Amino acid sequence: MPLTIKPIEGKVFGAIVTGVSLVDMDDKTFKTLYQAFLEYGFLVLPEQFLSEQQNIEFGKRFGELEFGALPLANQHRNDDGSFSTLVKLDSQRMRTNRGNEAWHTDSTYWPVSSKCAMLSALKVPNVGGQTELADMRAGYASLPTDLQEQIESLSAYHSTEFSQANDLGDFPERDKNSIYHGEAYLRPLVKVHPETGVKNLFIGRHAFGIPGLSRQRSRELLAQLLEHVVAEPTRVYQHQWREGDLLVWDNRALLHRARPYDYSEPRVLIGTRVKGDEASELAYYPNDPKAQAGREALALELDVLRAQRPHGF
Image (cartoon, rainbow, N blue to C red; front, top):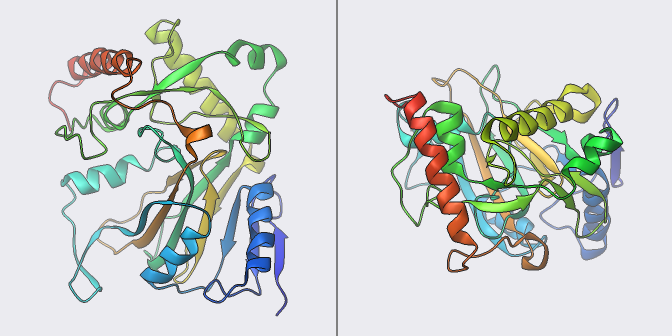
């Protein structure tokens, strides 16, 4: 079959790619694929059945990896590479997995946020467990002009400690080597895509504390923007996983989330994430004097959330 890139019907973004094997794809084909990735924001590639190493090699074609072939699963990985034994629902791992069922973009809680991410399906539940994506480019473009102007110069802090506490009442143990590291990174609400030049919103569950606004107004504005993006069905796509599927999306322009499912059924996806370019995705590093304001904003926000949910998760 020839390479076919078919826009997803009824959506303003996304395409399904067939007629290509990611394992032996040449550079010319990848260039075509990459241009489609920039144009459509995400690509669905059915029936690829990539091994962990093949996931890594494909990810490297997009850039330096943040991590490669990491199991995003509710089962434990065995020494032979198979998966069995369910992860306990009350474990931190599953609380983190459940947190990802709210709209977000990856790695905004690190100094350098992600360029793109991909998932390969190994095991899927019978019902639920889909991955949804939402187009922040079309979301921004459809905002009223006065609201676009209002948010043009605004930024918000991003932290997974905030999002877990806010969404689940979960206050994970802090560890500077984990995603719960005590830092919060300030990022603009309006992002200019570094490769296409297109403006989009840059929001999601990790965002909080817009400097210059009250806590209440900040929460209202972030909720308003998120609800606007996902309210229009043409801006939201739900992927029903089949084993062997690969999904790759642009973290600089799209939101995504997992959907709930019966957690007694296995759901095993292999995740690979590409690091963003520092020139466009760096907020600042923890040793930068600007980082202290983020720590202080996060501490104040967590104090409020703890008071609201004193018993935690």
